[in-house]
Length: 193
Length: 188
Image (cartoon, rainbow over all chains, first blue to last red; front, side, top):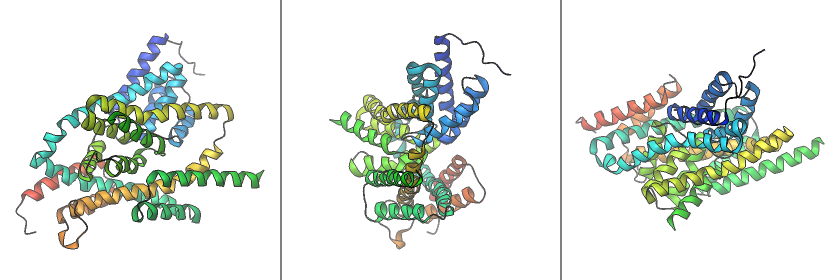
């Protein structure tokens, strides 16, 4: 049976946590799910700080909580590894790379976007971005349709009509759906128990 | 006070974007284009393009970009802090509840109802970017369609859906097509 390695000193573990999250965040393109896979490889397979089941639970929690999946996963892994200090270190490691990269880009953006050639490239890329987003929606929306649940399909249609045609505030729509979910859970709970 | 406004706006983005990735996009658009005059739709679309091309969550990328343009480095820090503050509290709390009860049935029911709604909201944000591509930010008019943009969009969509191309590669191709086709003396 595999043993966890002897615990390194707290400072060494915090340093490893910071460098790992920094590295993962700097080189992961493609959003939350990709970063969770990299975290598993690092913290489960390499450092043995977590086991498979814990990582699965953390992924579920990171997806279910508000906010970016990468930041949520860092919070959970950090807490588990080194408590409150670990959480802060892991979150810092996760947000520093995008902050540095976007700061540099935004400082050059004005000069950059007013260059006619760059503007043409950016404009061309926007067509690609629209395609990427609508491709994602196609996949996710297909999943919703395949549930064949009138409830979910109805919610999707209602939310689209409310936001796109009537301009209802997105936060109101999200709150209404969350409230609906709570009510439904309470009703199902009462029926079941 | 601009720092407070930035903080509160991105606090709402952090608090209400559930499901990761693109879920934050309609909320960011709502806060920085519709509720506050911080970015034009054109700049917001550029921001999403840049966020797609760089590592890191869209919400953090947007907080940094908008913060720095509105109020410099302190603005970027305040906006990013607002963005992660809800998660710092809520994720810790949820982890605590989860470890104690190992039961997420209420949360799962809420999520099951939120998921289709979030898909609908992302669709709305995607359509506004598509309208930007097709009509160059003007109101929809069939006589003023940008055919290069429309052609790039359809090609990119097919490459992604049918041939499972990598998104970044697809966007780079569209960027190159935009540059080359717009510089060529085409008859339209």
